[in-house]
Length: 337
Ligand code: KG4
Ligand code: ZN
Image 1 (tube, protein in one colour):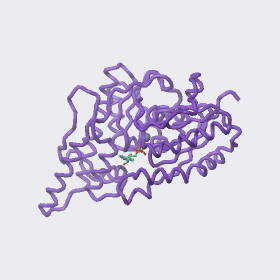
Image 2 (cartoon, protein in one colour):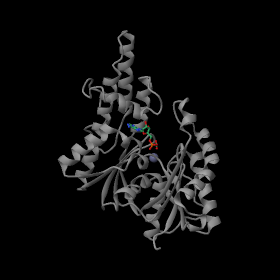
Image 3 (cartoon, protein in one colour):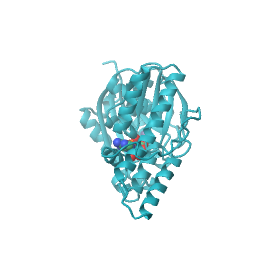
Image 4 (cartoon, protein in one colour):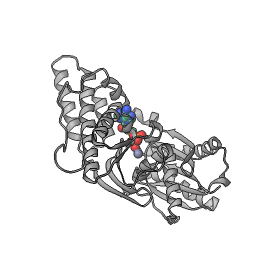
């Protein structure tokens, strides 16, 4: 066998993700989530997440090995998310990865979480075109990246100046009385409503940058709902959800296509938890078709945080002959791309 078997560990937020790949072949992708413990707080509680990672780490690694039909001695390299993310949560994964790498006598690769969100698509759709543009939208990040080579060169073109896109979905869901995390509930409610029922504001729509802003939109929706409640009339949840969602996906797809045009790139990748949004997928496809851009969106299980994405990027680093990290590598909550 010539392709390396890489164990990937992801603990930047609430998911303890362990993935195993051979080159770009996915062998296992096992996840333990502490989301149930956070739901009643309406957001991820860092200390709770860290403790949950500590408890889940060893069993999740063991079940990934079992799922792949492998033993520890089959692992050729260990990759881990070194940042960005919650500091205490990252530390658990980084410490575990160091221990596995040292114990197994294999190289360790600390990787960037955002680059891993890009690399994962290769497990499903094959090698990434070079260059590509990536739109990463989740509860923790909203970024546009230019990706000449995911293993060596990823350039940030823009990001949110306030809330992440998923965060806006979660906050608006709360205003509408929907459960946390609210993205999937807004998506579902919106199917019964009209995206043009209300004209909610689109932040940074025409400002010429590739940055995003969602806090003004979130506040506008909250004000609208409050005013409606004060009037005693029922809140049209489906229309509010659809109109809010339309404002978000309009600006996301508009800026993603602007990035493609500006850098003359013909391949767009969308990743992160919000990439599961049905309206985002549909509008992105429509606008990509109109612009002659090819669209790649990994399946939902690879879009949300997982260990396979880290393993996939680790495999790229091994293939590129990148230097491994030392055992001194820190967890860095604000690791730049
Ligand atoms: O990538 P992810 O699992 O975790 C991080 O935040 O890194 O993303 C979770 C986010 C949440 O904000 C959730 O509400 C959002 O993704 N999300 C969605 C949908 N499914 C998940 N947002 C909109 N529509 C969806 N269908
Ligand atoms: Zn993520």
